[in-house]
Each structure stands twice: as structure tokens, then as C-alpha cells.
Length: 196
Image (tube, rainbow, N blue to C red):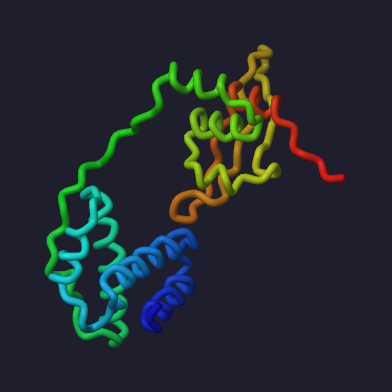
């Protein structure tokens, strides 16, 4: 990886960008360098970037993501007088439509949960399905992040089961999501392995 990219990554860390964002961008730069044989720099042209993107079987959304990453790098380089121009300025972005959620059909979800013999994997599936967590967010969960706290109103009606603290959300953001009964049921079936 070029020294310029390393400086850019250090700048991103200093600005508090998510480690996941920095890692994703690193992979994109590395892929460009491996497939074109050249690191990004002053000699990179808009035509080279377009040709490389054209050679890949990717969606408009992925193409736009690459262009956003490369644009951030070149803008940073020009602003810090490390690069003389931003070739991405000459590239028109593809039109990307906001995606609508496309959840798994209920019958397929029920089949996946029923067929799952691994209690931990079952918890993951249920948390993703019923709390809306991304797979990477579930992977970062620790047992301290799950707060089971059943609360009832004055009439005795159950109003809350607790919540999950998502510490490593997209873009490094934290949030809380409510627990629901299917998650509690999956957690009850999961016994964390003990060490001897």
C-alpha cells in the first residue's frame, strides 16, 4: 500500500472515522492497486478508474461506493497539497435508488430457525430478524450488551422485556433496540460454553 494511502488512513483515524469504514476503504484501494498494478496517486486518471470499474461485475450502488471512497481520498490529497487534482470530479455518478427493506419471508425465517441446531447461531438469526441488527453488529455483541429487564405497567401488563446495546453500529454509531419474546426464547435456549 502506498505511503499516501497510509497517510490518508491515519487522517481518517484522527478524524474519528469508524474502524470498519477505514478497513473497507483500505480493501477498495488494495483491490484497485492489485488489479491495475498501480497505487492511486497523481497519475491516476478518470479513464483508468472508469475502465477498472467497468471491468468489474458490480451494481450501481457498489460503483457509487467505490467512487465515494476514491473521491474522499483525492479531495483529502488535494486539500493537503499532496495531490494536484481529483480525477473523480470528471466522473458522473450512477443513479442509485434508495433501497427498500427486503426481509426474509416469515415462512422461510420460521424454517431457518426450526432447522438450526446450533443455539448460538439460532440466537444470531433471531436477533438479526427481530431486532434488525446487521450480521456484523451481532458479531460484536457481548453478553453485557443484552439487558433483560421485564417491566410491567400499573395494571400488570408487560410493557418492556429489556434492550440490546448495539455498540458497533454502522458508521460507528451506538443505539439501543428493544428485546422481543422470540429473542428471549432463543437466549433461553442458548447456554454459553463454560471453560474448565
